[in-house]
Length: 381
Ligand code: HEM
Figure: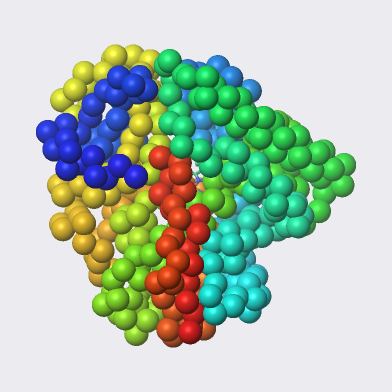
């Protein structure tokens, strides 16, 4: 992530990156302003990336008002707080099962942090959790790259990466479309069927909208939670005093999760595109420019957080931006928080001596926009 850029460019919270043709924003108030003004800072970034255009229909993350509200209202009808809260016993059951299979020298990502959210989101949507190796292949193809997405002067390698990422998106879309068609013919007790049936003011979702929304859920809904679990453990392991406080008082678990989202934000940057010339942080930005809003950097902004580089589970209030802010605030935040709470509590219950393995180093995801481990070896006893 780019929070270190803060130290390198203390005079500039907003800057233009010649290499990628994008504007980089690092400051908390500047990012808050961009996230609160969707008319000027549009989410429809795909209009600058022609190859990706086919996937904007039903993709909440790409929509602006008024279409965004319409779709968000419809999907929120199916994906309610009650639907999420009701998942708690099943999340605990899956976690206990996965923990039961862990050996003394475990690896957090493969053993728990990857399978848990994928099984949960697959069961919720109603697609077979047994297909998770396929999801992993498709999603890894989209994210497991060091390539920085650029809108100008893409190298042949960047082009090849982009083409292969779009191929993965296409395969996932075909897979989900088949399931949506099946639900239309014969509804079941799952989220895909609820989305098929959802109706607000006489409006219903199309197959393409459900497919693309399902893709957003599968992609946004699992890799980020995997990172959250890994990052929370890394933070607690590196701060034994804080870890002891959380162990002693489990009501601190949710605050520890919020602080780890601030300290190591999984989704490091969100993108926006300017619809007109504007000014941000005293810098003039023309229309039709792509912006990368580094929420990971804003979460370390000393203008907002006292001692931003200190991991402090008692931080209160903690207005961290890890789930974004404004109309696009993460729809899955309640689910991610619930999974984080259940998994962390059960890990702490089961393994009083849990620590990272001193003999095996963690590995980090190569993508510059993602902050998280791809491997976190642990010692359980
Ligand atoms: C939006 C982060 C988990 C579904 C977002 C945004 C962020 C984010 C930063 C805002 C994007 C923007 O403004 O452009 C995270 C993190 C997670 C997480 C850090 C885990 C720790 C989930 C889960 C789901 C989910 C579990 C679904 C099951 C979504 C959806 C949106 C979204 C549908 C789009 C909302 C909209 O555009 O209105 N997420 N997310 N996320 N997230 Fe999450």
